[in-house]
Image (cartoon, rainbow, N blue to C red; front, top):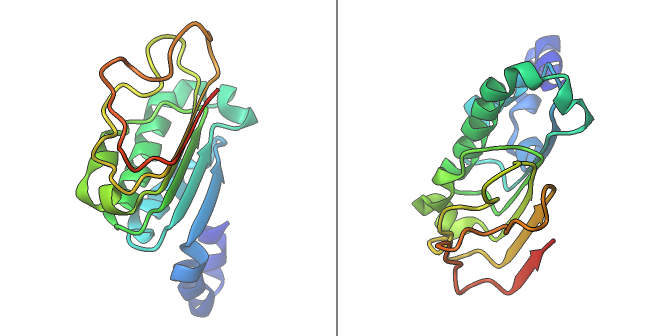
Length: 167
């Protein structure tokens, strides 16, 4: 929608990239969302404080392009993390590379992390989150075999966590 709004006139184009509008974003994936994620990479750096991306009901429709879509979601998350203003991140029903989360900007600002996993094997989190020194809330929901653990055995959590929810 922002792309369409930005085409109406210059004033609306400026509004579409205003920090106030980009402060908190919720994205539900569907077949046409990849271009919106690419737009987000170009315009959201330093503006986004809250980001929630959901696989949504149409995730089966886009199964053919899951690798490309996962890459686009990873790039959007990385862009928001790099900006240094991201305080809250939620990812639902997605496989996303989270390696950038422990970079210095996110380590200082990310206070809330919510992950819902769909992966049929492995762990929801398989890398240490110890460097996320500002992280206070961590929610992990496994949407697969409940005999699996959400956290790999080697994962270390930061001492700053005051709320942990495993479901």
